[in-house]
Image (cartoon, rainbow, N blue to C red; front, side, top):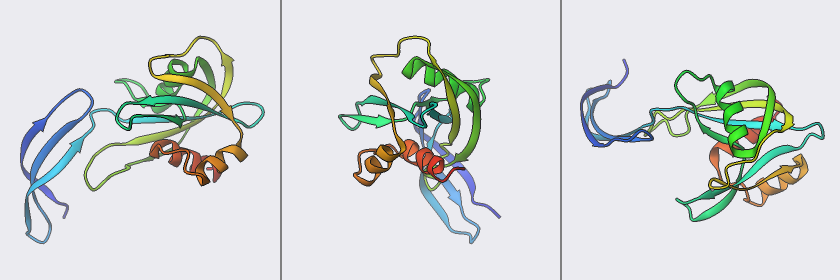
Length: 175
């Protein structure tokens, strides 16, 4: 038997994230009157893009919520009707100006299953080359980074984004 929602109170809803307070019945009969739940209407995708030198494509992204500019791999929401591979191709083009080839789905996970239904997908691909400019409102710069440098950045706590970290660790494990 799984926990069962008995009722739901809407606290906030948007096209990006919803917050609910659910009344939940657990298998042992215990009831939690306010189990806060973050609902994400869209899944997300991150793309590990490799060039012919074995370098990985990064974006230096503006992050309002942490008042910072962070090194991350290209990522974003999966739109209705898109597969993770299709979304990865679109996000890489929007954020970097690069076109990718042979996108390969490698992993899917829930980063915070105790409080949200958010799903992250990881896609690996190669690049066909630069075909357009990138979104300068979202990205400060685009850079190819070697595996050696990525390992140093991880060791030095320079990559802080959980989606990027998980994708890069999976890549380094050669999954």
